[in-house]
Image 1: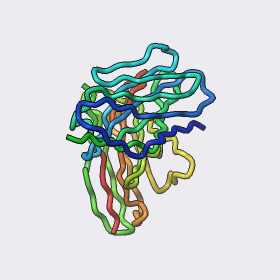
Image 2: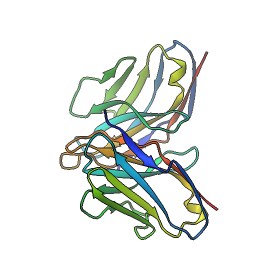
Image 3: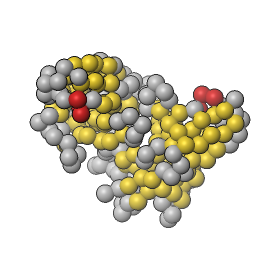
Length: 117
Length: 115
């Protein structure tokens, strides 16, 4: 079974600062997918970024980037130039492949990120 | 886009009644849909995987007779909470993925309160 650990229950930074959220996972799979989802107060889950384990290059999406360290089983999320709208719960999630499609996600406990004005 | 809707957004029911929650993929066909449960201030827990035209696969500890899942078409999956009790009160979220796709797109969730 896979496990996902987010060791930071809550983080608070000033607007425009850079913040890094940590995530580690445990698996015996060699190929898998990792995701960061954002859940604002509306509780709508929003995909932030995804990474395929077989790709060595770190994924980036505008102000969001990851530091994927496969050997260390680490998948941190960096948010640059943070904005008030980034305030939300952030969940790290793991998924193993399922015959050419999606499988159920295993989520970490989440990090509550607060961006201060 | 990849839009997933859920209905209703919130429901209050009496103990012992059954409640049906619908999950629809609005602009794509979803061969696989997933149902998650989220308690207050906690993470999402996978309940079951729903494949179109076949029986759902339930996670360990999830009662299949209590949480009935039907995936009758490529755009609709339903979760029925049978004989609901106060401990079933929770936030239920569905997600859907495209055929051969790895990314899950989530619905807005349904808040269930059982009195």
